[in-house]
Image (tube, rainbow, N blue to C red; front, side):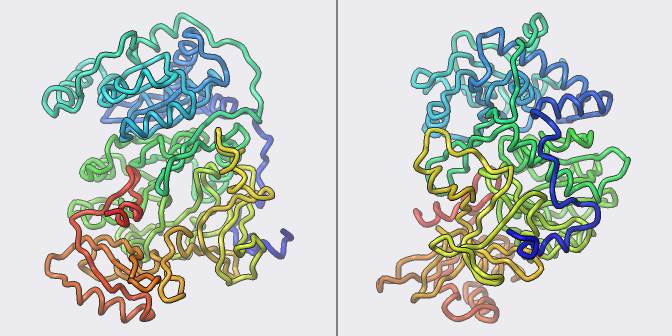
Length: 554
């Protein structure tokens, strides 16, 4: 692309470069160690009231890395990490990176089938797993290549007294830990204790080394492992840091992290980018318990907050959220799914801070675009490509389309993955001539801001017209009384489809005809839902992304 084909550069906020220095570090570990030393005495992570400094995180992760080497793991081997947001997560993740072991982030809510697929596909030899899920691991262990099992509990690093109380509640009161028996399993604390007696083996680190198999969400089928290198992750760290810089000052930042760290968005932003600014990240173990998120807002007064549309919406509809002081909040970024206009407007009104939507994929490490954080954001868009990144719109033949025309978005940049592990066919389908095919339908405006219309696979075909669920859902959620909505296409018996809308009420009195009438006022006739089904809740991923596929199957 020429400069003329990158109109977004003219709208970059002051201080954001067009390009990043991709070669400023040789590895993510080099970058992390610089941050660990620079901010050694600063609080790094806090969970359930227990805080660790960057120096403590550094020391424990080094011991954990030495333990992995002592147990026989070598650079290039794989380690699965299957915990929620507890202090053990960053220690284990940084330890794996220091050991040169490829990290395989794993959703703790996976079923045995999903676990077996991911562990077998990745060839993981070791795992760090919360004891709550160990019984599931036990049932599939013989069918995997796992040789080292390290178990941990929610309270393990919370201190002697508090840790025991928390674990007593989890195990004996809430009964959240099914019985398991895994021979030779080692506790996380014991692994760190043993690791202090050894040193990390010397080995060469290269920018081209794969450091992460980040598996896709599996919202449209079997999850695939995106192979991400030092270069990929360093690029995305530097890109997002450059985007944040105009809003940062010399004061220590408080980052509230309700999104699970195993997810690509939170992993990059919270686990990898925050060290570069010495931020303290407050971990929320389970964001579905909204009270814990609101309590953290009240106690910690975060300056940075990242989330997804469903979380923002849920918070705005919680009575206690009205009593939060947002004077310290500077940055709110939404990712993972489309941020609805009604939610973004209410967030801005309630907090005084714009809800800036970002965009990316697991395959792009993940951030590719973001709205500016200086007040020039455009609600309803995904913003502009981050530095050193190109985005274009193409037709079904992968030919570039003019400004304003709708087609599939493609991404090119240093953060784009090498490919899918063990799947050359899918890799070839997804990366064409260096461009990452996103499967998202959108357009570029004259000013270089991009809009996502919808997922290609979710498009509804009504009498030959393309109908995009996001548009219908966005309109429906602007009606007071509609908490959440999801649109799908269902066969109409003529070879075409009709629009069906699933709705979660916020007002028991709201009726089907009210919703349809509201949609008629804002949508062309063929886009108006022909059927409304009320649900108590909508199926979602653990991150909060609504699973339309599940609704189609129901």
